[in-house]
Image (cartoon, rainbow, N blue to C red; front, side, top):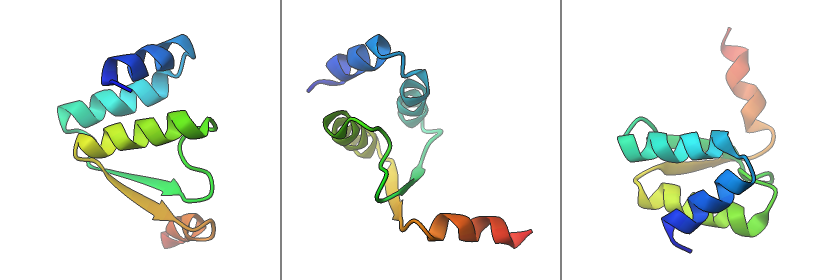
Length: 77
């Protein structure tokens, strides 16, 4: 799937936050993305895979967290 096709699908589904992530990656404002491994970014598995591949091709490092690791960051306070 091309980037244009992917963006078109995201626009049709009104997934503006995901489009913003892609735009941030293109401009260099997004270098890393932390995701809970079991959840991913999107519910649609194929679309999730395509978006993550695009982000990685734009230089974004995807960091997968186990479900219990995401709570540990808030304990720094």
